[in-house]
Image (spheres, rainbow, N blue to C red):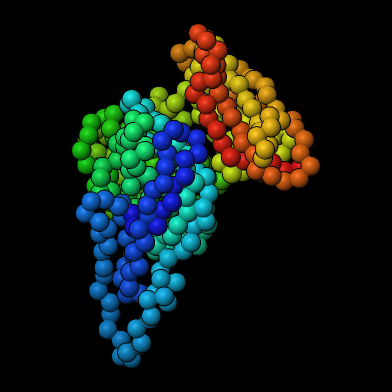
Amino acid sequence: MANDKARTDISRAGIALGVIVLVALGAAAAITLTRGGEDGPRPETAATTPRETIEPTPRPSETVQETIVEVPPTEQELWFVQDERLSWGATVVGGTLPRGVAPDDRVAQKAAFWIGMLLDGPTAPDREVGATTAIPRGTDLLRVQRENGVLLVDLSSRFESGGGSLSMQLRVAQVVYTATQFEGVERVRILIEGEEVEAIGGEGVIVSEPLSRRDFKDFAPPIVVEEPRPGAEFRSGDIVSGFANVFEANVSLRLRDANGKVLVKTFTTATCGTGCWGDFEKALEFEVTEAQDGRLEVLTYSAEDGSPQHTISLPVKLVP
């Protein structure tokens, strides 16, 4: 994907500054969002229809203004693969997005930007901690659209190439988990070259219906938080929920304020654990005098030495 990117390490060792390259296409070009790579961006252009009246060529600054949208920096999750399972890392980055990829829906635009980041693959710091990707190099993001909580993600046919059953399931799961972190996106429908398909690849990963995170629990990390979403407002009494497969089903929670002070330290029990997946939820009671950035940590502790394990750390907006 051709974008300006700046990546800051937030929650996983090794996440560092990435680079986004901005490509300004001409006003007569059809925009295609592509993965960055050694071969560089591959924009596709469509022929224009001649006009009777010759219009002045826009200046470069005007062309850029018309063909891109700004995506403000936020902290979000990118879901890669480690040891044949999904592995997440949080990154702060913002940049630009070709206007033709997503409609004037800020949620869809934000999701499109981060899916584009996902298609770029792990950076060097990601790879240093063992992160890989099952998504084939050269997969292009063609379009993103949100309809009634379902995000339509249109990918190039390269997405279906290579790999066996595990690879196919992981690559679909990577897209689903990255896309469903945004408010207003509950499920994902994958299209290929603009067409609805029954399955991905010869191994037949069924994508005929919209998919959720729970459709890929067997590939998930031991704890998955579904609510709140990263960056969401969080008030006293709000519920933390998700699913987990942890020792004795014990799920611990900590809520910190902008200064890192622990406002809440508690735990709950999933409906199943130690070898099976169970649901968990817990309402958190706290007090703040003003709106501020906070951080929610959901984790478990080692049965051997009591050390924290499988920590999920999410940014939230604490509201009085």
